[in-house]
Image 1 (cartoon, rainbow, N blue to C red):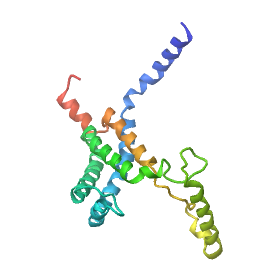
Image 2 (cartoon, rainbow, N blue to C red; image 1 turned 60 degrees about the vertical axis):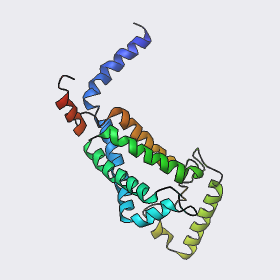
Image 3 (cartoon, helix red, strand yellow; image 1 turned 180 degrees about the horizontal axis):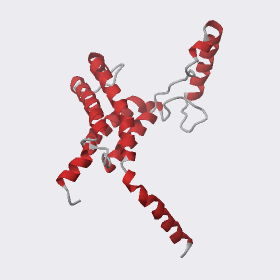
Length: 202
C-alpha cells in the first residue's frame, strides 16, 4: 500500500462517517444569509419611495429602467427569499434571483469602489483611495479625541472608514452559488423531506 492509497483510506474512514451531518453546511449558509436578505428587503419595503427614487435617478442614483418595478422585485425577492432560506424550501430556485440581485448590486453600486468593503492597507484589494481615506480617518479620530468623549465613542468598537466595495456582495453571491448546487441540505430543510416523499426510492 503506497502513501497516496493510505491517505485516501484514512480520509474515507474518517469523513465518510460525517455524511449524516452533511446538511449542516447548507443549513449554516442559509441561516447566515437569511437575516442579511430579510433586513435588506424590509429596509426597501419601509423606505420604498426613497428606493424607487434612488433606483431611477440618473444623476445621484442608479438610473435603472422601470424603477418602481425593479424596487418591488428587489424587495420581494429579498424578503421572500429570506423566508424560503430559513425553512429550506425551494432553495435552489430562490438562489437564482438572489444571485441576480447580488450581481446587480455588485455592478451598479459597488464595482467602482473596488474590492474592499472597509478600507484596510494591510489587506489585499486596497484601492487608490485607501491611503487618503485612512488619513482622513486618523484626522477624524484626532478631532474626536480633542473635542469629544473618544473612549465612550469607541467603547463598543473602533471607528472605521467604509469603502463600500464588492467584497460583501461577492461573498453572498458565492454562498448562494454553493446553495444552488447543494440545495437546502439533509434533514434541516423542507426540500429534503419533499424529495423523500416524492422520491422514496432515492
